[in-house]
Length: 84
Image (cartoon, rainbow, N blue to C red; front, side, top):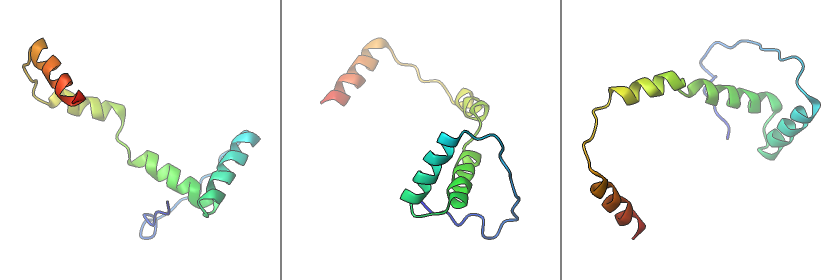
């Protein structure tokens, strides 16, 4: 998966120290399997992570939703309907 999200954005250099060798071998192999550079692979991982909302944001959105009033029979019926 090659993302071009960084083309029009300013970029920064990040250095990561003390990465275990076995982790480096794994991520190099994963980058090679996708036919992209290690740098591109890591940029994609960072962008994917940065694009996800924080858990606190997700929970806040859930708490703002209105509740649904259903009884146990309606829940059972819904589950059964999904099994058919």
